Length: 113
Image 1: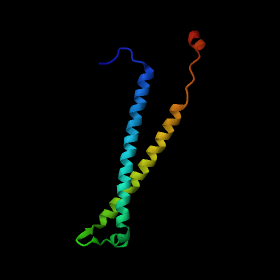
Image 2: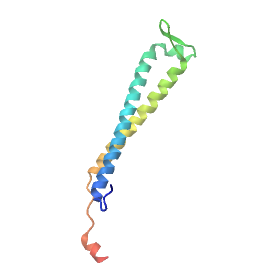
Image 3: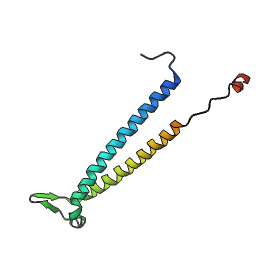
Image 4: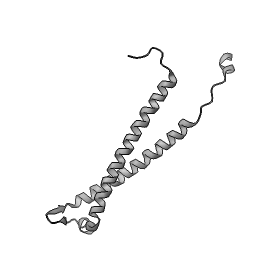
């Protein structure tokens, strides 16, 4: 049920809250992906030379890693880390902009028009 005359300030705060929640959830998701890709890279690190040559590497008895796994992990880590940094920077900029007060328009000028 929509209000007939909603408070513009309340609508603005609701929009800000929704935007903040979206950015925060994306940042958390990007952080989780970066963490998992980083852990995979740490696990594949000792076998990087073999994987970069295009041959499968044996991580443990019966467990082989395909060379594409290293490339996918590097790509996922790079993209998710970049996205995480961009989201954190955006959230910081929004917080700074939202904390600045906008001066009220001069009431005398409104009356003159």
